[in-house]
Amino acid sequence: MAPPRDLRGWIALLEREGELVRVSAEADPHLEITEIVDRVVKAGGPALLFENPKSQHPLLINQFGTERRMCLAFGADSLDEVGRRLGDVLEMQPPQGIAEKVRGLKKLKSIADSRPKTVRSGPVHDVVLLDDEVDLRRLPIQTCWPGDAAPFITLPAVITRDPRTGSRNVGMYRMQVLDERTTAMHWQIHKDGRADYLMTDGKLEVAVALGLDPVTAYSASAPLPKHVDELMLAGFLRGEAVELVQARTVDLEVPANAEIVLEGYITKDELTAEGPFGDHTGYYTPPEAFPVFHVTAMTMRRDAIYPSIVVGKPPQEDAWLGKATERIFLPAIRMSVPEIVDYDLPVAGAFHNCCIVSIRKSFPGQAQKVMHAIWGLGLLSLTKAVVVVDEWVDVHDYEEVFFRVGANIDPKRDVLISEGPLDHLDHAPSLQFYGGKLGIDATHKGPDEGTRPWPEEIAMSEDVRRLVDERWDEYGLGPVRQGNGRRDRSLSQLLRR
Ligand SMILES: Cc1cc2nc3c(=O)[nH]c(=O)nc-3n(C[C@H](O)[C@H](O)[C@H](O)COP(=O)(O)O)c2cc1C
Ligand SMILES: [Mn+2]
Picture (cartoon, rainbow, N blue to C red):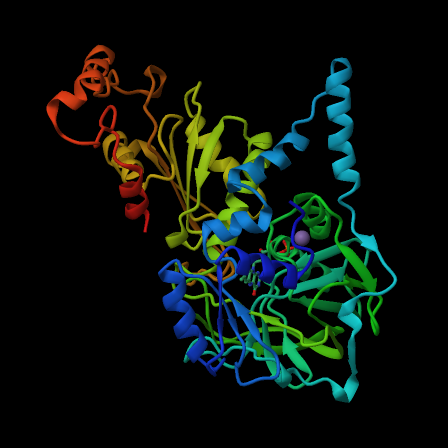
């Protein structure tokens, strides 16, 4: 199935799949929509298209709010399948024989076809507003929480170029509305957009795309290395190149099918107080100086639809954007740290607070090696606590992980306190950006790790399990039939919440 071409194709797909509800009642983007969405997200409910958000433009929200919708967006049965598509290309070996060569060529072609394609025109230029005509108040921009400083644009794809190399970056960074034609730009210090800004001498041109096909929107949030274009990832994951058109007032290309594009510039020395903002940490982030974005043009499709997301105390809709990243990047992480079997970033840990990782252990100290590897890997380096378990432990089953942590650690030997960079938004460390790290080695310890002989784990013998399987109906206990003490999957799911 072809991926949704744009936001409208995505909305149509969601509607066909019974995954979208149109809300025709008037609803206020000032707080009211947040309260509605918070309830719907927590109930695993549908995407919502607010047709009357006290604005000329409708507002789409909760498009990513469930695992099923996330899979629909990628046209995949599971998020791991999306990860495997990427892993297949990363793990390419020199082909042997004709069949492998053909398969190899197909993979290479899929990479070549991922590059964004420039087209001459696109619906994003149906309406062009310049200079004084620009008015951000036309859009139903949400004030999400009562303590928020102002309305914030929350689901943008912010496009810049590295002033040194010209390479493109696309990132998702919230934008606080300051007045009709300016916003703040919340480029945190570890992010690529911030690096482009720091490298400019004077003026940095910026374009902000709003209302994209879901894979391109997701890609803006993906933690790629600086030199990799997020639109290339989008093209690869979609199986179809992203189409771009030249922007009207800046020397940047923008998605041809975006609903809305804001064009403009940021000057190096102009900063403003950004925040407070009710953040994905579950707390308000206090005001801090961030660059000011001047909007010189606002271009739109006719009847443009404005996309939004609410972040706040987890779980919120962004949980699934994060889970998509967790799954999609697993094969890439395994390329650098091959003993990693699986990992889980708990939603309740706001992604950067905790990483549970399972490893195939073959030498003493390997759990500590993996902790340090994670603390050195892209944005995962900001992880505050790493819990390492053995390969047979299901990292997504928090009950089981808790069991291993309790059963297998000697706190004196297996808890590592280290230090390093922390997430920009982490309010707990004494210093912003820098502080303590916690590593917990909950793996079985081998004879070379200075312990007494490790005991055997309890498990029923194979023959008795088989016997009980065969005789199950005779006991008259109905269909409850879990092997070897395994809990029902749905119970594990429930315990994750
Ligand atoms: C809904 C949402 C909002 C986000 N808001 C911000 C933000 O305001 N500032 C920021 O630096 N990162 C924010 N992020 C995370 C970045 O989008 C993410 O780290 C991405 O990798 C940044 O792109 P870059 O690596 O090219 O800089 C947000 C992510 C999501 C899903
Ligand atoms: Mn980037």
